[in-house]
Amino acid sequence: MASSAAVVSAKTPEVQAPAPLPAGLEWASYACVAPLLLGLAGVGLLPEYAARDLVQRGTLAWGGALLAFTGAVHWGLALAGRLPRAAAVVAALAPAVCAAAAVTIGGQRGLALLVVGFGLFWLYEHRVLGAQLPPAYLSLRRQLSVAICVLLAVTMIISDANGLS
Image (tube, rainbow, N blue to C red; front, side, top):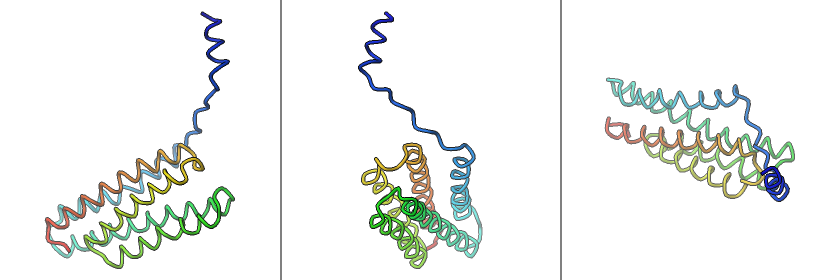
């Protein structure tokens, strides 16, 4: 049996597991989604229209900040020489432009634009840059993108049900 194991290991290249992200950074990333959860709760549970509207605007602003931050990560990677500069400029600016447009539009349409922005940026990272980005980062971004998109989409639906634009 030992000889067959040696043959398998000799023929099979050793695959190194990706380096995990530091636990503190991972928890901080997930904590950034908490305001969106609070925003969903506020839009759905607050009794007064003015309070629900304020919470919806805050949720929209926080979602926009998170989307712009994803572009900032790519700007940092470009500055560090990890990404081609021309692609990094577009990748760094597009989320911020989308976020600014969403906040300007406001309401349910702004929330929908953020969902589209997060979804498209996730596709870009995974399809175009997947080989250049660390697997641990891509995994974390996938989980965060899904959570953010779901929370923003449900907030949009609850906003409609509670009379917000």
